[in-house]
Image (cartoon, rainbow, N blue to C red):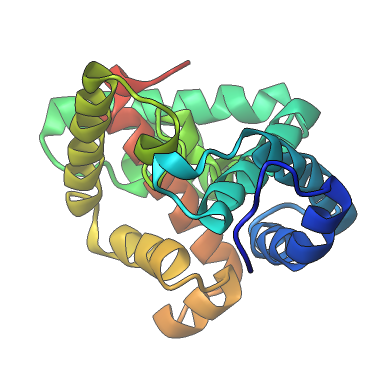
Length: 237
């Protein structure tokens, strides 16, 4: 990749950075339901790339590729959210699970177990696991749901002109999130680490943990909903 100037033709920018858009789209696609198409992500990413080319300011300190990556990914996520492919019932059940976890943990002072949450919701354990399975698709973006954008915790302080108060609040949230992740049950922490830090897919995580892909999906969902419950005061919803 090479530096981008304000006078550079948009067609040349697209040509030179098309692989960056495709790479980001393929990375996201592995974490999304089958209804999301690669072509749709790439189309949204190209819009983000063009916006990045128009708005890039070399004086902000970030390289164009870093800046463009954030804009491309953000444009793709915006397109997915606008599609609203998750049924309302999924969001409603996610809130129910988060509230049950919060109540149980406040009452008992320990991690809410699967059996505890199922009982609180008047469900069998199998029915509760099915709810977790259904919510997993939308929970792939749960960091945003509890108040955290992936872009926000990467390079945004360099490029978006955050005020000192914004930066302080961002840092406070990151500390709270880190603390909550560290407090998760061990298996949930491991799933998040393998999935987000090591960038393994659910099948690969399952092979490491010796459980099925569907069980990893359930553990992932429960971890994300537990984070949402414990970070209730930071929620944007």
